[in-house]
Amino acid sequence: MYRDGEQAAFAHWVANMATGAPMRADTLFLFGSITKVMTTTLALQQVERGAVDLDAPVVRYLPAFRLTAPGAAERILVRHLLTHTKGIDADMFFPSGRGPDALRVFVDGLGRQCGVLFGPDEFASYSNGGMIVAGRRLEVVTGLGFHDLLRREVFGPVGMHDACASAGEGILRGTAVGHFPNGRAATCSTE
Image (tube, rainbow, N blue to C red; front, side):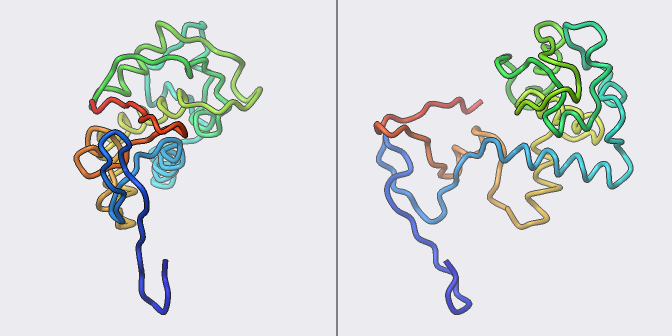
């Protein structure tokens, strides 16, 4: 809260139902779908710099991108990934990739396990899978890991020095653990 040019921070309740750790003004929270906005921001930065064309096929930048439906990957444009109009049937696909190779493992698995729900630009369908492909494309184009790219291009410039993009980093910094209305703690992997 700001008042008369002064900032005041307040915290209430608990950050972890299982341990009773208190919520503090500096307690961090893991974020989920807001990373789609950050991924789009990173992608548009690359467009602005001339490194990426929104109307180019994803395979131009990510030649390893494949789907089980023949020819489907070649029809998906960078724009389709960012606007949820790509048609990839991947939202129930959870490969075991962790750490710096997680996005590569996901994209490699698409070619063996996932097809399409519809053709590019036919419909819109909110998609984690398309954003993961967009994140991997960013890694290939920039030569940086996704988390490093976020730190350099988003978190750093706006002063988000305590921000991180993985549960493994977040848990080391006094991060709240999600819980359900019945008071039971949510579980998450820190890898």
